Length: 175
Image 1: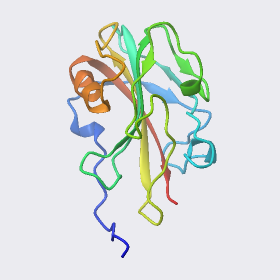
Image 2: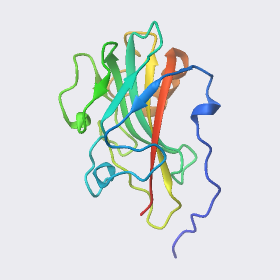
Image 3: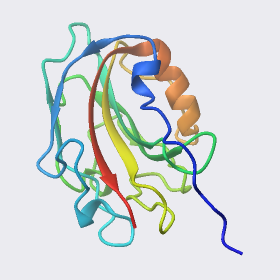
């Protein structure tokens, strides 16, 4: 028997969080609201996308970068990428940065697949289209104070209290 995954689409989680300043994010690999390139799909490339941000809020002391799929068939969605403690002068991550050497002090937490780094899109076959929210969080502290074994939920909780601004771009994918 195959499970029926029919369900309503989950809300975009970011407008549901406390309001913070918006700033700009762009990508050479993602067109906002459009299907992801194969490179960002787990079984086709599994490569983190290029991200470039600007107009960050005054007082930014570090950045975190996340990728979240609210459409996963779980009550808590699925975290594909959590990168924390990027230095305040960072303004870009090249394609594949999740597999490259990071700036001093920055590190990946494990994603919901259990690996520290990026896990590409991997929705269940024949499920509804999934949205992948790539978010750059401007943080008002030099570090979120997390250990490398912290969960994505712990990072999200810490970000709720430390985020000065948020820049969001999202892609979609369906098997």
